[in-house]
Image (cartoon, rainbow, N blue to C red; front, side, top):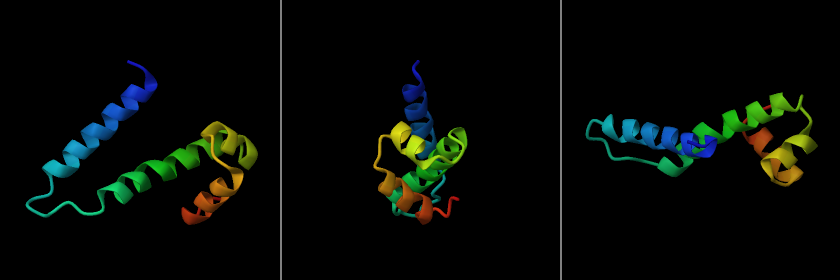
Length: 78
């Protein structure tokens, strides 16, 4: 199984767990919840891997450096 398939499987399992443990409550803002749970640690991990170099991180993530800066500010990542 490839790394991206493992990640997809982990997301599915986490969502299964989330929906299983709602205890009758309706699901709410699932999209934002998942993005927040995945995006922040992804940004932190990549920034650590590149020693804080935003240009390298943006290249690895395949996003614009300005977009990366905004996301780092959004999540209060130095």
